[in-house]
Length: 153
Image 1 (spheres, rainbow, N blue to C red):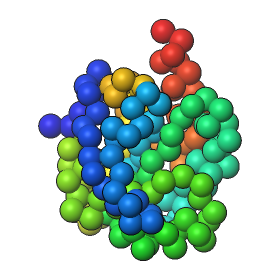
Image 2 (cartoon, rainbow, N blue to C red; image 1 turned 90 degrees about the vertical axis):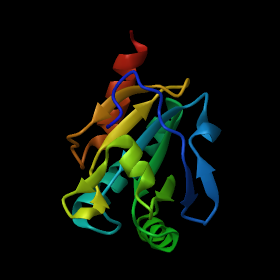
Image 3 (spheres, rainbow, N blue to C red; image 1 turned 180 degrees about the vertical axis):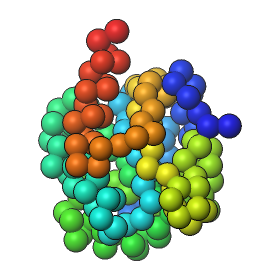
């Protein structure tokens, strides 16, 4: 059953692009954009990652942490980050458990890739917005607008 707005965001333990184990809980108290994407170095995924890269300073000013997740290895993530100068954390969900917990597994490539979904998580660990359709070129702006609407409540 996929998570929805109002649900607590499932915690996880995943390796980042340096091989370090990261958890969602370590970002408690911060806004988190947890974005799932199909594959490193593919056209749409690169545009989406570069959107977050180009909007990174504005995201940071708003206190938003960006975490990218795919089924690629930590080593693949490191190459992807280096190639495109990505300043945020990429997480490796090789067992597909986190994508499954969020309802983001089984994308375009079936079980071989995550769906392009983004979950916005507030400071308390609650999901406040879910993107199931993403504008890869302007996704950082979409995320900032959605968080802005949420905090305006």
